[in-house]
Length: 206
Image 1 (cartoon, rainbow, N blue to C red):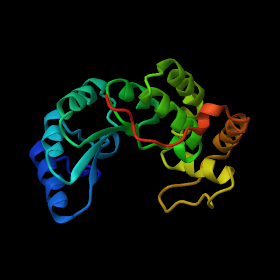
Image 2: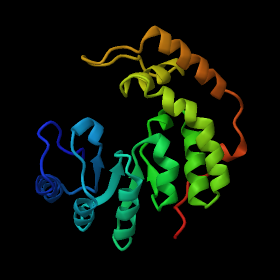
Image 3: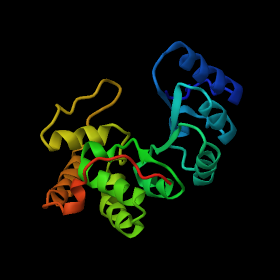
Image 4: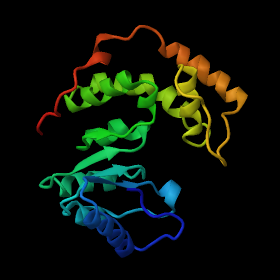
């Protein structure tokens, strides 16, 4: 559930918005904070209060404030509540302060490498996780050279999936960036190492 955009509600408005939906819909929900898109950010107090709702099970953090994210993790430890990275480049830092995963753009293109990063961090193997983070860094940056989802749609098409089209007003990736992206993706087409193929399993208890 994305935070309301354009009208910039106060924190009370955020709570009422999310709680109204959670009361009306019998599905587990994730609150999505992305101030670069919506113009306003949820506070830690608001997220912690929402975490007490039975249907609100997680928080997708794309606000770039690691201190706030760490506070939310700390204050929701007794809830059935996951804190997830919403920015690929922030996944490793968020996992390091207690986050439990990510909702990733890059995983649409390199799911095994992105999974290897997350599982290494959840296993406490931060040296290996850092290697995966640095390996994927060029892709993280390339996928945001133009407005998301323009580059990732092109990347998936380059890999042979989808048709690369967007609804207006989004436009195709510029030819120059498409060429650069194709060259970068070719570098990732090298044979993958064993840790890119981790079996999915529950995250370890902390």
